[in-house]
Length: 47
Image (cartoon, rainbow, N blue to C red; front, side):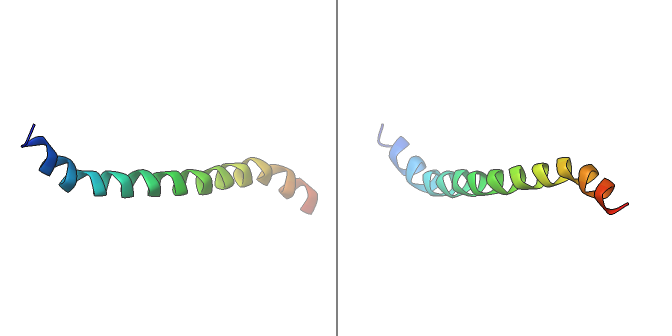
């Protein structure tokens, strides 16, 4: 148990940062997917 605590302290922060960044990127990727799905309709409007 004593060996586990330092590992969690060393690895815990990078895991939290990674999960936070993945959460932020996911919302931006949803916006990109929506834009790509709307692109054909927007292209038809221009013609």
